[in-house]
Image (cartoon, rainbow, N blue to C red; front, side):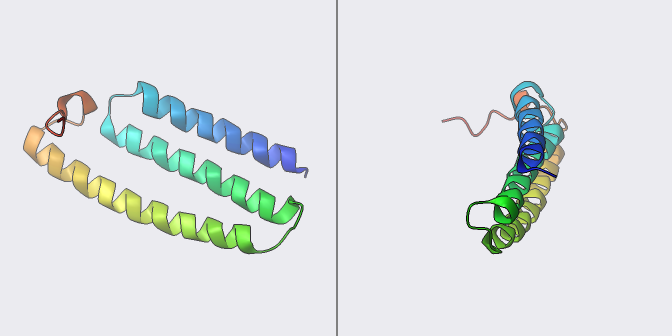
Length: 101
C-alpha cells in the first residue's frame, strides 16, 4: 500500500476532527474530535516511520508516546467535563464562559 493512502486517510481524519471542533457546540463531541485529530497525526507518524526517507522505529515510538498523551488528555478532559456538567447541568461549550478574562 503506498504512503499516499496513509497520508490521505490521516488528512481526512484530521479534517473531520477539525470540522467537529469548529462547528459542534457539545463539549463531548469537541473532545472526541480532538482525539480524532491526534489519531490522524499518529497515522502520519507511523506511515513516515515505515515509508519515510530514513525508515526507522522512531516514528512508531512517537506514535506510542502520542497515544499515551492522548489517553491522559482524554481522561483529564472527561473529568473536567463531568465537573462542569455537575456545576452547569449542560454540555454546551457556549455556556462555559466563566474562564473568560
